[in-house]
Length: 427
Image 1: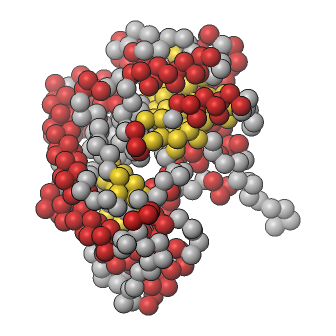
Image 2: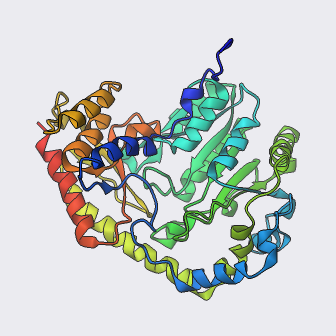
Image 3: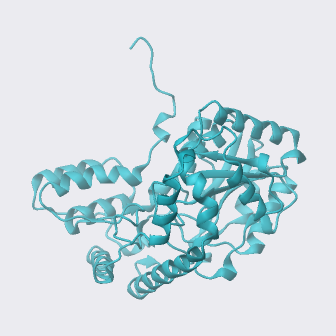
């Protein structure tokens, strides 16, 4: 072409959680049975779709309205319902989006190019990629400490905010993905206090908040904050075995406390309204789903199931000196940090198939991170697909997998396979 077509930081728009699948698919063609633990989809793991949810969706599909374009300001009945459950929320401060990327991209894209949002390390890659691409540089992070229950390093966070005047916002993911952390009220209040003292806004990603094992750990930011401008992100497709319900919305609080923040939110709204609508069917059923007598019982049953799997993981991995296993506080993921001092960092997987050997050697050679070697090696030799923790903009080497497998025997066997591989390649 006469001119380079690519954005300078287009390479930041990566989602390597799925990119390992391309390699795994090639390995699978050699008639190997891959254990897929790379990405969240309970339906693919044979979680039963409850009849009450099917009935709500089927009944909604009988109504002509769900086949229309949604109004550009979204469905009144759903907006009214959400506000009825939170008196601090106003209808005009709710913005619906079609999916995760639609919301996250617009939140970052509508900032001034030099305005930065600092986020956690490890990070959920959709946030970190979008923020870095917006800014044409690397994502700025504050450290979550695996030696302190994945709590944030508040001193580091404040120092980075204090000495980088381009930071205008703080991202908090609670419950956190990929670390399994659930932050206590005093931690959240400390983060909000930093935002208050340095005149920042807060983005609070709460999409997993109904999936915390212990309800006493569940703290919504709306329960504690009323001083700084902030955005809460919500999503129903994680709370149900319904992944394609790509219905995401943001709730905006204290919009009028800062004129600049207010104009920023108006720009997000305007950019969304340039499109036709947000998805109608998932919006339409939100009130019926959340008020169903079956929803709470269904959620409790799911959490008991995932909590049991977390306990199995704890029994298998906690005795290992080669890893740091932090007690899980919520579903669906299992993240483990590797103690690099305990491993043979020069380990090289030996694969009988020359084509697979060449394939993984090529991938591993493009990175100096041990966890990438670890994950591709276990994929090639044990046929288990898990994700390097470094892919989550993480300074820690480790891996993330799901706890979605419904077959407990298979799930346990997968964990034991990973454990045995850890022991096999350690010093």
